[in-house]
Image: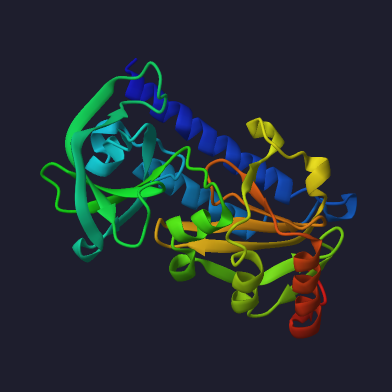
Length: 288
């Protein structure tokens, strides 16, 4: 049996198991309800799953290398001592700066980066206007008119100022209007906190970055404290959405917007003032 056919069969079986499991979970009823009529929604959902599987459009399907777009086939670029990875977005020529180099980008015919068949393609690497090449570059594949954004996998800013400026957060960072606060994040609020968020969290540009413990860090979880504020941000320049941003009881802020999770110590005073602003100016949501 061919590898592609075997993979497809396994994926179809996986989807079927998910379907059956969900139906069983949603139909568990007390004894008094055992004689209830079958849930029509479940039957319709089962039919939809069958349709998806027969059409080969399931989100669980692994697209073969030959069926991927060129930019998806070659998602890696090694430059300036680091590896850059396709972010998933393209940008217009008006944002393209000088050409940094001409090199081969590469990809693998299966999901494993080690042991898979390696393919390469010639490309040109460019600076991006108002974005530091320490964080991201633009890649134009040979015979392709688009400029794709590639971000550096091991990017770690030295300071909060580097983080803000390298990513141009003043322009591209979007802050959610829903957030949670409190000792156990027990209370939800809603409101426009964009301005105070930037004034509080992004203005202390000289603060140095520190890595979390699981990255051989300089700061321990016990030093950081527990989370007292949590929200989500978006960074549409790269297409990244629903990115976590948090503040701790000891005045640290952190985000998984960075490849390696870093934290910045702003001090307890800054954190307390920010929470006071939320309590005084934002609307409490009665039920989370």
